[in-house]
Image 1 (cartoon, rainbow, N blue to C red):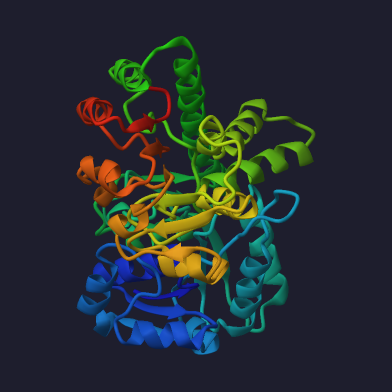
Image 2 (image 1 turned 180 degrees about the vertical axis):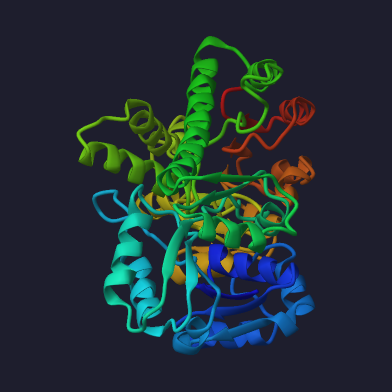
Length: 431
């Protein structure tokens, strides 16, 4: 099938490459010629495991272009995978979706299905379909379908090729059958719904997971007060099939491009419709406070950070990605700098993206050992394997004052016991 994909970010590029993997001819459209040139050379502009290998394997079925007119003209299906960033009021910014909708309306010369894969507020598919129909240049039939993505950064390729489910939201039998044909080779259950239900599935799913994370973080905070261990508590909870074991890992909050944005967007949408999602609002509040948990712990050791050397291990919001969006490091590092700390940072992948934001205001280290050398305090913000597998003695050997504040509970009880033996001060979340 001839498919065009608008946008080459996490959603658009992964979608396009995975569709090509299953035999479709795919044209990926973007406005950034430098990014496109990278992709023509088989290089991905984003870090995602397995993506470049699939780009190379399916090079004969993948085209990258800025020429949206030719890309959309005869496409049978057009996926919209552009960003829907958060506005200042928390609502979703749909300007890029509508830009693509306008381009499609002016370009298509054959009947087609437009598929909104971007995360959009409930009712957006209806509005986009109306917008395209009102701006069509040629006498064609264009139907809009909702097909939300459920990929996680770091596992996006696997999540697309072997999805937990594929949600197809349509209002006509024709559009439904075309999308069923698009996905017929995919290894995943397919659910066909109405468009508004499909849009809501995306928000409801992400916000539920955000709720689960904020809940376990609140229980972890209470565990610290009453002397319980959150690891043991979470394990006990996870055996209940109604609860499940996933997303019960306590830490310093969620980040990334989805959970923060989607919780705020759904909360805004509810308020706009004179309804209050109290649980979602609480999750947002808990998460924002949780990101400062390590800084509050550090105050017990240093009244001021002026002149102190602070090591930050991990900059990205989670391992396996170079994405910094809503990462705890973005809140904590500026506060440390503001107080006069010398900040040394290490991250195996996210360092260059961090440098774009902070330039030379911190010291960028090539190894964990370099970052720990002569440090007065260590904060762990990302649970990279390099951090989890670090020889515990390294902290005592290299740091001026071996104080380790672990925001991701990287170390087991055995490792914590070794730290105590070596007089390493160690604190984590809820233990």
